[in-house]
Length: 277
Image (cartoon, rainbow, N blue to C red; front, side):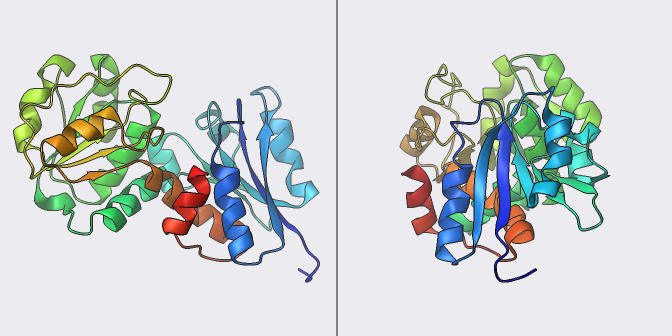
């Protein structure tokens, strides 16, 4: 690779205009003086295989994958990481020097790294985690919690069948409870996590009774628009330490940036400000 080489990466999804990833990677490229670009690409499911086949020929080192392609891209990848296989979805693709497409999932890394940075006293082994939601983000977070040796995951979803399917996939340490009964498990939970999009700008509010919540529980939300969701605000009123969802987005980007641009980037307040605009 010569000094004149322009390093290329990007993010693929549909729609893509809402993605914060260009601002995120753009900030790091500028900070570290790297001669590279990170490009958002609106790509349909029909065109995805063709696009991924041609990007390496155009000099791309890799791409992030977002909705709606995170699951279907595994059918296109040549090499799938254990994490991505376990979760059943990928968000980080690397075009290897041998021409093979490597698929990974860094969402769980992002989630755990965010908690460890923002709540250094958090101990995953201290007690059960109560997880709200059983969608794609939940799968990545459940896998990460199990990896961190959380003793039990109490899982609930408004449609119970999805939670049951997730338990069948991950096994014994998961206990599924009905959505209407989940609040009764708050006292035993040391970590409470909203993995749904409820509470996001433009979505309905997350209606979940927090009356039994005690200050010993760390509460986090993967939603970051707004930064302090009504769910987090109610947890703060009950004396809980809370962690917003922006850090998960920032930390999940670290492995991809390092692979594509050759530098391990830092997640700090400057980055948060840049991404929030």
